[in-house]
Length: 342
Image (cartoon, rainbow, N blue to C red; front, top):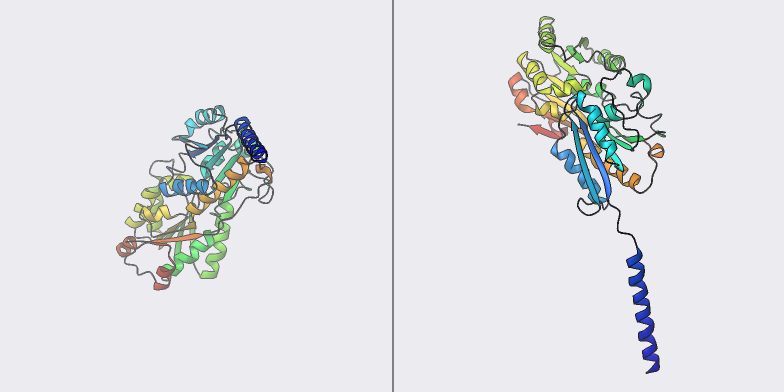
């Protein structure tokens, strides 16, 4: 009997100690994560947000339980200082920024910052960028392997894929020999982009003509496409530029109006009526961005987290546009396409 009483006393003591320890433990910390987007990128597709939230859930971060997500969208460049001040005042643990927002709000180098209208850095919070074409050239990180500052994230290799886009355009429309290149004149990587597609064009026997267009000027896009038709261009390759992305529906409409097969940097162009879009999968990029958030919340320093490259790429073909242009896309390309718009 005495032995049983002793065991019960011991068990009760251990159970009481366990309850005491549990009571002394602090409540689980609620992580506060910001998600900021910028007018130049336009609204974020629902699939992208869903992929980002899925990535957080996979790592145990659940809204309403241990996570608060704060969304901000600068609808105009003039709103950037206000949005930046709001985010800084919320004392967030980490901010996820779309490509254009990362450039507008990130702590980029002073020489580049001086050229940016309404640049408004957030210096107090780590920033994970998602979908930046060349973060080193943009001054966001010192190198891909060692970012060295408060920013890290994922590149989408937008600039690097321009030669591949030209090859795909030629494959889709073999008869094409004269290609108009739509470029944004003040893009910091314009020279690099043009020179790289020129190398590929020479190998494919294509003649290129570059049309520099600032979409802020009224009627300049219309004038550029009129010039392409006068100069007997046969197709259009669009280079990078957030202003182009914002005007993608108008650009796709102009290409169709003038009878030009067109290739651009993202699926959204094909959704808007362009013939094709080819890019990294943004759903994958934002799902992986959640991994950076997780590591930073657990104490990792963004300066030591290497910038990652995409591993999944998407070719999207608009078959309605192909029919309107009288084009038959080769079956081999249709089989490789990630998505066909019918």
